[in-house]
Length: 320
Image 1: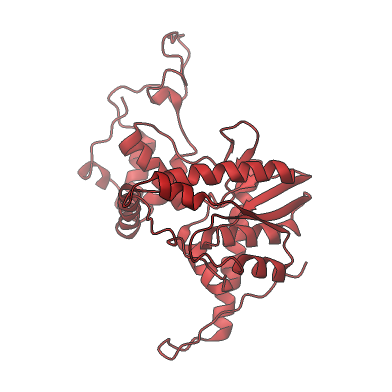
Image 2: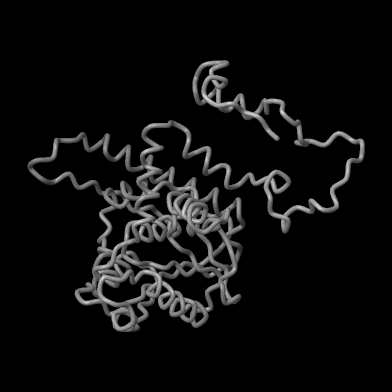
């Protein structure tokens, strides 16, 4: 399949003139990066297999548009055969532009289904004015989408959560839920009937925002219901943005750590059998070194600081 060109709209008198060739180069470079990152995530977690029917949940926001666009391209290039079908839930929110998604999907030739269910009225009736509607709304939406997935015979449900979402959820669980937990790239649904995947797990939100702008997706605002994401999530997102600005490499290090858990060096007795632990006299890789400096951690901190030996002036590092 020939990939549709990315059209860069630079209209507007106040906007500075841009070299269209440079803009096209940047757009194609970004598209390739997104395809590579999504492809790597799919391969790393075996998200999509031969013969899968992937139901892409399309909300009309930048993330789900980007997910659908990349999966649609990969469908025609991947070494495995799989189907893609877009599904949107029309929750009957006042002012929802119901014609936007069918028109866009039809123009792209992407199979789709619009599920209609008035969850908006249910949420408004149950949640008092000024309350956060997101939790109940998401539960109702999830139930409808699971039902539609079964009706369509979908073997995978693809959601548009990206790397920033995974990091923010990790810190929300850490700060408020007392858990080391985030959104997984792949997991069985809570009803046990579906496999949920997040192919954008390696993709940064700012790249998706840029891609949506370059592709000219007909975005549907997420504020039609008048509800906003809760304060804690906004604060965590702001914290991560500040770290990204002020501390180069910190976000990448935290994200990489999510895939390198060491149960023996944590405290969860369900993951590691501390009770039956015995000394055998045989050296153990990554075993306890008492009060000695962890050389690998010291090297990582020195690399971040940029000066050999500077780590000792920043923070005492010991692995106990």
